[in-house]
Amino acid sequence: MAEQNILVFLPVLPSGELVGSSAELLGAASLLGAPVGVICAPVGQGQAAAQAAGEFGAVKVFIAEHDDDATELSAPALGAVAAAWEQVSPEAVLVPHDIEGRDIAARLAVRTRSAVAADAVGVHRDTEGVVAEHSVYGSAFTTESAPTHGTLIITLREGAVDARAEAAAAQVEQLDPVESVSAAAASVTGFTENVEASTRPDLRGAKIVVSGGRGLGSKEGFELAEQLADALGAGLGASRAAVDAGYAPYSLQVGQTGVTVAPELYIALGISGAVQHQAGMQTAKTIVAINKDPEAPIFDIADFGIVGDAFEVVPQLIETLKAKAQ
Image (cartoon, rainbow, N blue to C red; front, side, top):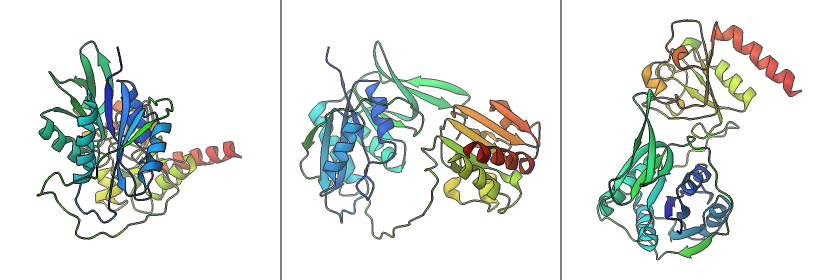
């Protein structure tokens, strides 16, 4: 029996490169069937992105190119995915669990009368078809969802799936020029590029994350988390309390109302571990907590805990890391 087609939307950065989650999306798709990529990119950038998709395991790639001055939000990408859907009749569709991915998933589900499994942390197949796995109730439970019929559209949490597909010689097919799907689509009226220079990995996809909380005491104290993150080559995060106190920008907030991460290692410095914070990091493979309060909730989910002052413990850890690096 031939493998079922699994359609995967692969976002493209303004530079023409695939986003960092593309390998993970195609790896997850390979667990279910034959990964088929969909790329919506400015004219002239689709071929390079399609080649990268093949290296990540896509057996076929659809390219839909649009003008650089396209202003409709999500509409071109939705049109591309919908057109590819008509071509391959997928058993499932995978998109990133980000703003654009959630928008595409919802609108595609309405157009095709399909089910949506949002914020999945895993996928697998059983005897009846595709199943999505979810971490719910502050990551206290893992649940599964599956459609009673038809295609399942899945938004996948970045960093949650370790599987990677083998490289493939992708068959590339050009889709017709993308047309607006909705006359009422929101449009971009202005754009200013915000360039942030950083040597740290992106928080969402980082294999190691160091997060600081209100227990670090001040914006200057939060630099301790930055120093440890740099020593480990880790992404930098913060609790909502630290963000509200002005220690770190909102873009670093990990939790229910911020970024959700699923790294190999998560280190929490001075974070009490409220359920809202746990919801954004509890799926980490290994959790290390350093806190002066032995009753802090973070210790309930930590794999390793140190009851102590982060300003005494962390400098020793950094020195040890530097010594090993020499």
